[in-house]
Amino acid sequence: MTPQPVLVIGAGAAGIAAARRLRDLGRDCLVLEAGPRPGGRAVTDHSLGAPLDLGASWLHEAEHNPLTPLAQALGFTLHDTGRRRRDLLLTAAGEPATPEERAAWEAAADAFDAAAEAAVAAGSPDRPLAEVVPRGGPWDATAAHWLAAMINAAEAERTSLHDYVATGLGGWNPQVAEGVGTLLERLAEGLPIRTGAVVRRLRWGAAGVAAEGFGGPWRGAAAIVTVSTGVLAAGGIRFDPVLPPALRAAIAGLPLGLLSKVAFRAGPEAGRLGLGDFARLGRQVAGPDDSPMSWMLWPFGRDIAVGFLGGERAWALSRMGPASAEAAARAELARYFGADAVARAFPDRALATCWGEDPCFLGAYSHALPGAARARGLLRDAAPAAGRLRFAGEACHVRFAATVGGAWSSGEHAAEAVHAALG
Image (tube, rainbow, N blue to C red; front, top):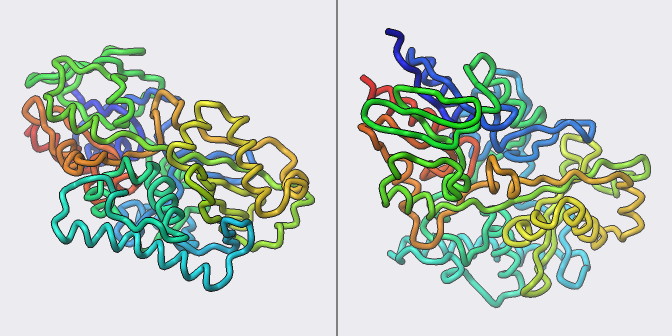
């Protein structure tokens, strides 16, 4: 009798990595992908005339990232733009920041991270990040907005202190000229991926697993579930029997935040707006209800401007639709260059991402809620059905969470664990 394959549910970075590792271990597998393509939350778009990553865009901590040597071996081009550099930084009054104000911004950002790290080192219990970071200084709200709502995709009030410190990133942080999504497409080549395979129910037990849904059913010796915690928490897959309470609590403690992008292609009158390649724009938070966008213009010398927006404002605009996101982005750019200059430079409609509304994802990447700092390890190590059911994805990595590299590593880990469990 031919052995049943391992079912890998989801063909994002974790699913691709799991399938490649299972293949290397001599295990048959079948990857079930609900969407029309592999790559998950890494997809490279070409509709603006050049590669543009709509999701994952950086190989974070590339010196430790398992995707770095794979990208280099395939001849992909990597470029690090610098972490906090701003070619144009505006104050709350709308004026270019002076050297002293730039130094104050840098100091506030450093103080934010230092306060969080000091609180953990001093033995603070896990609590909202917002409770331990500096407040009241002229740049403190800007640091909180940038480091939490933007980079972490969730406000500091909803972010676990311990998880924030444990998953902080630094080091070499390059973008990929050809696109992270393009890289994952290459790495998925030759794998047994079935797209349009929507799994709605997963029956699991010591004898194996059965997945039911559109295009199914499928039977397997084991299953590796790599779909987002947003989909899992929303009941996108029903588990039979129901998952243990501790595992369900871990999933609930790792909701997806949202980082949205709005991208414009420059027209012939743009004139680069006086800025060089990889130009970064940012501004000071002007008040309690202000949520500035961050910008990168002309990446890799291309005629593209990309705005980033995270946290609650990103969710609100996502629910309102692409037209609202574009209007907000144009208004943000007008703060730097004026509305007329923006209209001339970017005459065409923008491209806005919709990760929050996409039923395959329901968000961008995970953050741990206050008190849920242990959830990532619990989800990574969960092994129901004598190890025949495992979970993988960026939410399962205790160090490189919310990154494509972390997702890749977790997929390899789950594949090795399933292989060992099957004997």
